Length: 453
Image (cartoon, rainbow, N blue to C red):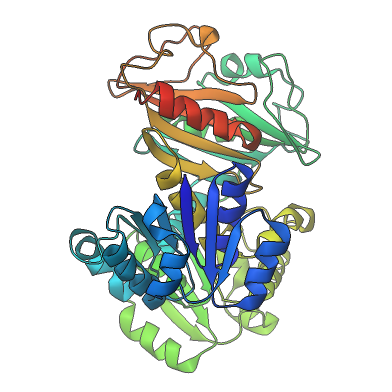
């Protein structure tokens, strides 16, 4: 597979890194010579210095031989023009574009049906808003993903020292809590482990599990995660994501306050919001937080464009008594540091973009993909076809590689949390957890066996 990536920022770099790791042919285009040098020095990819919207550069990159082109620069307009030129030069190349500006939302279908015929428009900011809403609903979760149209939840949370499940073997947990649950992975001492049924949970573990949505509340309670219901939320940062989130939360009847530093932006927000209170000020100002009764806030969501400000305000809000904090980060290098300083709930537009892109890059009948925050593994949802040799027999007899696990099956609309005796049937949705090292083998299974050529 040949992939052309227009844009060598955080998203472009990480997709290029991922694809190079999987031995795919990758060409990256960017006008920033320093970004190109960074790629060339660290990744086994071809890097071109130039404009991704230039027909000359696109042809030099081998667009006509490429299966996929990703336009993921920080400019919506550049991404659109790149797709327009790609549509002219190589109409058969699949095009994905990151478009974040809300003004374009109503035109996504037009961009697909008419020139530039973009196969997938990626708006990571809408996915971030969904993630924040999930965090607000699920106490203690540090990672939440929906599968099977929301019927199954894939959740990551930390095991507290006082939890009644600490020290318990995994195979004993379902009977103990009276709910179907399958632990897919445990991160312990920064190492990701796919545990067996005899393995025991320990305090400090980051536990990833899958369960039916209807039983999730009982499971969260069994992990002793108790927080007050979220009725009042403070949003720090009134940019595009903050505005989208406020609009969405207003529909639920939640009490919303927005702190924004720009006076002109505050005036615009005040005109757009129906119920949310808009406050002009600095979210890191302790006096302002005291004046706005930070102790009464069930949640504080930091969404400014400055990473350090988001971290600082989240730590400050927790120290001043806020119920929970959710922090927006874009720099992947910060992610491993967050648990050590007490920040657990993190959202990332760039990680959301990567998840959407991977869904459309993966071969086979892949319906959705989620990457764990530390990028050590992926969860894929795929459709099993009749030609697959994994249908019609117990999972214990199938050929999934070590480091992968079938964690969910949806058969005729019914959810199955699988065991070794579970059977996959043609047409079932299959949810697979896989460590990064075996993704290529899983992709081969999905291509050759689930989608027979």
